[in-house]
Image (cartoon, rainbow, N blue to C red):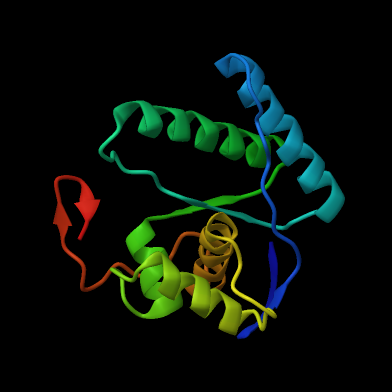
Length: 155
């Protein structure tokens, strides 16, 4: 979570909601309750979520999509607007290269938020998405000009 005031960005918090073990419904419930608690504690004004594309493991993609849907539901139920960005948009916004490596994203998140060290990879991804949203100006209006679409995804 970050605060944005013009071009100034400030780190607020980051972490991980653990879903634990158990069946899918119980794990999604844990994610929903965890996010509800975070929303109640920090009262964000907007939510940015990364769009998930299919990767090598369909089961992982499906599980991630269900968790992502749960996160979007938590935001919508709290009355928050939700912006969605592709990984390419996030990397382009934060690093200046849509094909940047995770380590580059971590480093730029550290620099942009003046953190004492590189955030964990998952935290860096989430913070990068928030930074992308802050750089985008209007909700979901980050430009994709200069990118071409191939098979329904930006490249």
